[in-house]
Amino acid sequence: MPDPNHLILTSLPPDPPKTKGKAPAKPAAPFTPQIVSFTRTPTMAHYPLLERGFHLINQWGYER
Image 1 (cartoon, rainbow, N blue to C red):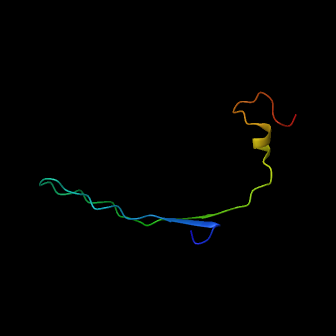
Image 2 (cartoon, rainbow, N blue to C red):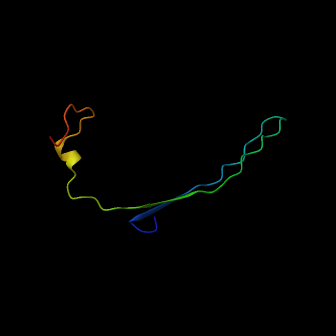
Image 3 (tube, one colour):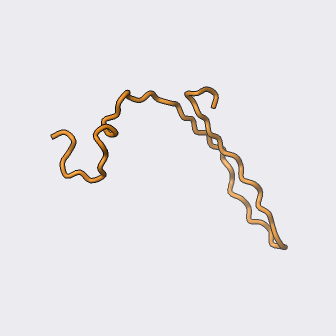
């Protein structure tokens, strides 16, 4: 975390396979590093879904 509002995830190459016995190891797929960045976004002071309750199946909509 470079600061409290950002998070950066990076991938690491996998460990080489350990070979047991005389069989050669299968060649590994090429590794491409990946980077994922997240930024914190401010949320509303109140959230209507949490205030009115959430039901997965509603016969009637919230706004009638």
